[in-house]
Amino acid sequence: QVHLVESGGGSMQAGGSLRLSCSASQYIYTKHCMGWFRQAPGKEREGVAALDTDGDTSYASSVKGRFTISKDGAKNTFYLDMNSLKPGDTAMYYCAADPTVVPGWGLRQYQYTYWGQGTQVTVSS
Image (cartoon, rainbow, N blue to C red; front, side):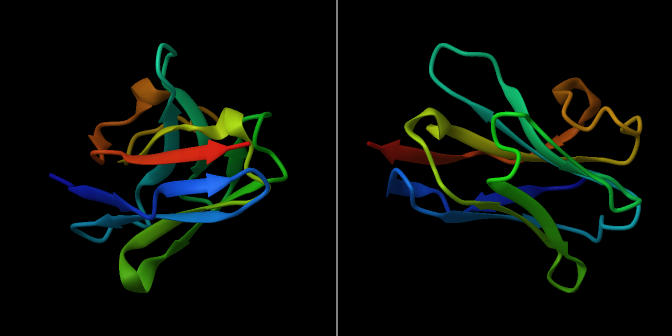
């Protein structure tokens, strides 16, 4: 069982930056794909960014060029750096991990078994 805990959410004005962190209870960084998802009120959860075991990344088109997913294996933590934030980025953000994600399918939530509890990001105009 892998436990994930997000941190770093908060309120920010449009154009600002935030870094979300996801700490894992055990070492997952060589065998697990890692992903970030978000869910806005009244909307379905959507994939934002993913980092697979080969180091390949994928991003939703709405965040490409603004968000970056990365990891620090020594700290058992992976990150989502969010720049040029927009009000449309307002959502609850979740991190996820799974050792069996099909390559190229990292933005699909049903690929993931382990989830964090979520951290709120609110961007005002």
